[in-house]
Amino acid sequence: TQLLEQSPQFLSIQEGENLTVYCNSSSVFSSLQWYRQEPGEGPVLLVTVVTGGEVKKLKRLTFQFGDARKDSSLHITAAQPGDTGLYLCAGASIQGAQKLVFGQGTRLTINP
Amino acid sequence: DSGVTQTPKHLITATGQRVTLRCSPRSGDLSVYWYQQSLDQGLQFLIQYYNGEERAKGNILERFSAQQFPDLHSELNLSSLELGDSALYFCASSVASGDDYEQYFGPGTRLTVT
Image (cartoon, rainbow over all chains, first blue to last red):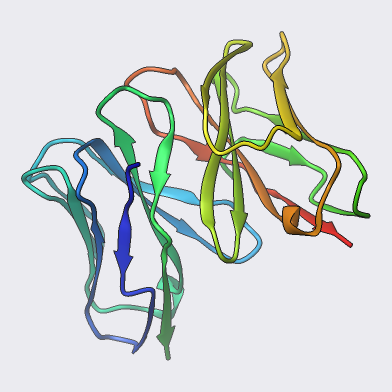
Protein backbone atom coordinates (compact mmCIF):
# COMPACT_ATOMS: atom_id res chain seq x y z
CA THR A 1 0.00 0.00 0.00
CA GLN A 2 1.39 3.36 -0.97
CA LEU A 3 1.33 5.94 1.79
CA LEU A 4 2.18 9.62 1.83
CA GLU A 5 3.06 11.24 5.13
CA GLN A 6 2.84 14.96 5.49
CA SER A 7 4.53 16.98 8.17
CA PRO A 8 3.77 18.95 10.11
CA GLN A 9 0.09 18.17 10.46
CA PHE A 10 -0.58 21.61 11.94
CA LEU A 11 1.39 24.82 11.57
CA SER A 12 0.54 28.25 12.92
CA ILE A 13 2.94 31.10 12.18
CA GLN A 14 2.98 34.86 11.93
CA GLU A 15 2.53 36.80 8.74
CA GLY A 16 5.83 37.38 6.98
CA GLU A 17 7.52 34.18 8.16
CA ASN A 18 8.74 31.42 5.88
CA LEU A 19 7.66 27.80 6.16
CA THR A 20 8.19 24.39 4.60
CA VAL A 21 5.76 21.49 4.42
CA TYR A 22 7.02 18.01 3.69
CA CYS A 23 5.47 15.05 1.92
CA ASN A 24 7.32 11.75 2.26
CA SER A 25 6.87 8.18 1.14
CA SER A 26 8.80 4.95 0.79
CA SER A 27 7.15 4.48 -2.61
CA VAL A 28 8.10 5.98 -5.94
CA PHE A 29 5.48 8.07 -7.71
CA SER A 30 5.24 8.96 -11.39
CA SER A 31 4.08 12.44 -10.43
CA LEU A 32 3.06 14.36 -7.38
CA GLN A 33 0.46 17.06 -7.01
CA TRP A 34 -0.12 19.71 -4.39
CA TYR A 35 -3.60 20.94 -3.57
CA ARG A 36 -4.98 23.60 -1.28
CA GLN A 37 -8.37 23.16 0.32
CA GLU A 38 -10.44 25.74 2.14
CA PRO A 39 -13.24 24.84 4.57
CA GLY A 40 -16.38 23.67 2.82
CA GLU A 41 -14.74 23.53 -0.59
CA GLY A 42 -13.00 20.98 -2.76
CA PRO A 43 -9.22 20.75 -3.13
CA VAL A 44 -7.77 23.12 -5.71
CA LEU A 45 -4.78 21.95 -7.74
CA LEU A 46 -1.71 24.15 -7.23
CA VAL A 47 0.99 22.30 -9.13
CA THR A 48 2.07 18.97 -10.60
CA VAL A 49 5.70 17.86 -10.47
CA VAL A 50 6.79 15.02 -12.69
CA THR A 51 10.57 14.85 -12.99
CA GLY A 52 12.85 13.85 -10.12
CA GLY A 53 14.59 16.97 -8.78
CA GLU A 54 12.08 19.26 -10.46
CA VAL A 55 11.46 22.66 -8.87
CA LYS A 56 8.40 24.73 -9.70
CA LYS A 57 7.60 28.20 -8.47
CA LEU A 58 4.17 29.75 -8.12
CA LYS A 59 4.65 33.32 -6.87
CA ARG A 60 5.76 32.90 -3.24
CA LEU A 61 5.31 29.10 -3.30
CA THR A 62 8.18 26.79 -4.31
CA PHE A 63 7.55 23.12 -4.92
CA GLN A 64 10.25 20.50 -5.20
CA PHE A 65 10.08 16.85 -6.20
CA GLY A 66 12.76 14.63 -4.67
CA ASP A 67 15.42 13.13 -6.91
CA ALA A 68 14.08 9.63 -6.25
CA ARG A 69 10.46 10.77 -6.75
CA LYS A 70 9.51 9.58 -3.28
CA ASP A 71 9.13 12.91 -1.55
CA SER A 72 8.24 16.52 -2.11
CA SER A 73 8.27 19.82 -0.31
CA LEU A 74 6.32 23.04 -0.42
CA HIS A 75 8.07 26.20 0.72
CA ILE A 76 6.18 29.43 1.27
CA THR A 77 8.10 32.68 1.50
CA ALA A 78 6.74 35.65 3.46
CA ALA A 79 3.48 33.90 4.34
CA GLN A 80 0.27 35.91 4.22
CA PRO A 81 -3.09 35.34 5.94
CA GLY A 82 -4.51 34.42 2.53
CA ASP A 83 -2.23 31.36 2.51
CA THR A 84 -4.25 29.85 5.36
CA GLY A 85 -5.75 26.50 4.43
CA LEU A 86 -5.28 22.74 4.24
CA TYR A 87 -2.41 21.74 1.97
CA LEU A 88 -2.57 18.24 0.52
CA CYS A 89 0.00 16.32 -1.46
CA ALA A 90 -1.12 13.48 -3.72
CA GLY A 91 0.97 10.93 -5.58
CA ALA A 92 0.21 9.09 -8.80
CA SER A 93 1.27 5.46 -8.92
CA ILE A 94 4.07 4.39 -11.25
CA GLN A 95 2.05 1.28 -12.05
CA GLY A 96 -0.27 3.48 -14.03
CA ALA A 97 -3.15 2.95 -11.66
CA GLN A 98 -5.67 5.68 -12.02
CA LYS A 99 -6.01 6.69 -8.40
CA LEU A 100 -4.20 9.35 -6.46
CA VAL A 101 -2.85 8.61 -3.00
CA PHE A 102 -3.33 11.59 -0.71
CA GLY A 103 -1.40 12.62 2.35
CA GLN A 104 -3.31 13.54 5.50
CA GLY A 105 -2.70 17.21 4.88
CA THR A 106 -1.05 20.12 6.65
CA ARG A 107 -3.38 22.64 8.20
CA LEU A 108 -1.69 26.00 7.91
CA THR A 109 -2.75 29.12 9.79
CA ILE A 110 -1.10 32.45 9.10
CA ASN A 111 -1.78 34.97 11.84
CA PRO A 112 -1.86 38.67 10.93
CA ASP B 1 -14.62 27.47 -9.96
CA SER B 2 -13.19 24.15 -11.18
CA GLY B 3 -16.03 23.50 -13.62
CA VAL B 4 -17.03 20.33 -11.75
CA THR B 5 -20.50 20.48 -10.23
CA GLN B 6 -21.93 18.34 -7.46
CA THR B 7 -25.41 18.09 -6.04
CA PRO B 8 -26.72 18.27 -3.44
CA LYS B 9 -24.35 20.40 -1.37
CA HIS B 10 -25.72 19.10 1.90
CA LEU B 11 -27.63 15.92 2.69
CA ILE B 12 -29.00 14.81 6.03
CA THR B 13 -30.51 11.36 6.32
CA ALA B 14 -31.10 8.56 8.79
CA THR B 15 -29.26 5.30 9.29
CA GLY B 16 -30.39 2.53 6.98
CA GLN B 17 -31.42 4.90 4.21
CA ARG B 18 -30.11 5.18 0.67
CA VAL B 19 -28.90 8.35 -1.06
CA THR B 20 -27.59 9.31 -4.49
CA LEU B 21 -24.92 11.92 -5.04
CA ARG B 22 -24.52 13.47 -8.47
CA CYS B 23 -21.50 14.84 -10.28
CA SER B 24 -21.06 16.59 -13.62
CA PRO B 25 -17.45 16.71 -14.85
CA ARG B 26 -15.73 19.63 -16.54
CA SER B 27 -16.64 20.03 -20.17
CA GLY B 28 -14.47 17.68 -22.21
CA ASP B 29 -13.33 15.52 -19.29
CA LEU B 30 -13.96 11.80 -19.69
CA SER B 31 -12.77 10.56 -16.30
CA VAL B 32 -14.68 10.92 -13.07
CA TYR B 33 -13.31 10.04 -9.65
CA TRP B 34 -15.10 9.78 -6.32
CA TYR B 35 -13.43 10.47 -2.98
CA GLN B 36 -14.55 10.36 0.63
CA GLN B 37 -13.09 12.82 3.12
CA SER B 38 -13.63 12.32 6.82
CA LEU B 39 -11.85 13.90 9.75
CA ASP B 40 -9.97 10.79 10.78
CA GLN B 41 -9.31 9.23 7.37
CA GLY B 42 -8.31 12.10 5.16
CA LEU B 43 -9.14 11.99 1.46
CA GLN B 44 -9.77 8.40 0.34
CA PHE B 45 -10.19 7.32 -3.27
CA LEU B 46 -13.37 5.33 -3.85
CA ILE B 47 -13.77 4.64 -7.55
CA GLN B 48 -12.99 5.94 -11.04
CA TYR B 49 -14.95 5.83 -14.27
CA TYR B 50 -13.65 6.58 -17.72
CA ASN B 51 -16.03 7.18 -20.59
CA GLY B 52 -18.75 5.15 -18.95
CA GLU B 53 -16.67 2.24 -17.75
CA GLU B 54 -15.24 1.46 -14.33
CA ARG B 55 -11.47 1.96 -14.49
CA ALA B 56 -10.18 1.68 -10.92
CA LYS B 57 -11.49 0.82 -7.51
CA GLY B 58 -10.24 2.00 -4.16
CA ASN B 59 -11.58 1.57 -0.67
CA ILE B 60 -15.20 1.48 -1.69
CA LEU B 61 -17.63 -0.45 0.48
CA GLU B 62 -19.97 -3.02 -1.04
CA ARG B 63 -22.88 -0.86 0.14
CA PHE B 64 -21.65 1.86 -2.22
CA SER B 65 -21.88 1.80 -5.99
CA ALA B 66 -21.35 4.25 -8.79
CA GLN B 67 -21.96 4.65 -12.48
CA GLN B 68 -21.16 7.03 -15.28
CA PHE B 69 -23.82 7.81 -17.83
CA PRO B 70 -23.51 8.43 -21.60
CA ASP B 71 -23.56 12.19 -21.01
CA LEU B 72 -20.55 11.57 -18.69
CA HIS B 73 -22.21 12.66 -15.48
CA SER B 74 -21.76 10.25 -12.61
CA GLU B 75 -23.76 9.14 -9.61
CA LEU B 76 -22.56 7.64 -6.36
CA ASN B 77 -25.14 5.52 -4.57
CA LEU B 78 -24.78 4.92 -0.85
CA SER B 79 -27.11 2.39 0.75
CA SER B 80 -27.80 0.98 4.22
CA LEU B 81 -26.21 4.10 5.57
CA GLU B 82 -24.36 4.02 8.87
CA LEU B 83 -23.28 6.81 11.17
CA GLY B 84 -19.69 6.29 10.04
CA ASP B 85 -20.63 7.16 6.46
CA SER B 86 -20.99 10.79 7.48
CA ALA B 87 -18.32 12.61 5.49
CA LEU B 88 -17.62 14.94 2.64
CA TYR B 89 -17.87 13.23 -0.74
CA PHE B 90 -15.94 14.78 -3.58
CA CYS B 91 -16.07 14.17 -7.26
CA ALA B 92 -13.12 15.04 -9.48
CA SER B 93 -12.64 14.90 -13.21
CA SER B 94 -9.74 14.79 -15.61
CA VAL B 95 -9.32 14.84 -19.34
CA ALA B 96 -8.03 11.32 -19.75
CA SER B 97 -7.37 8.15 -17.88
CA GLY B 98 -3.73 7.70 -18.70
CA ASP B 99 -0.85 10.03 -17.97
CA ASP B 100 -2.97 13.08 -17.28
CA TYR B 101 -3.42 12.92 -13.51
CA GLU B 102 -4.44 16.52 -13.04
CA GLN B 103 -7.76 16.13 -11.34
CA TYR B 104 -10.16 19.00 -10.75
CA PHE B 105 -12.43 18.72 -7.76
CA GLY B 106 -16.01 19.72 -7.29
CA PRO B 107 -17.27 21.55 -4.19
CA GLY B 108 -18.35 18.32 -2.49
CA THR B 109 -21.47 16.94 -0.88
CA ARG B 110 -21.59 16.95 2.90
CA LEU B 111 -23.46 13.85 4.05
CA THR B 112 -24.69 13.64 7.60
CA VAL B 113 -26.18 10.36 8.78
CA THR B 114 -28.18 10.62 12.01
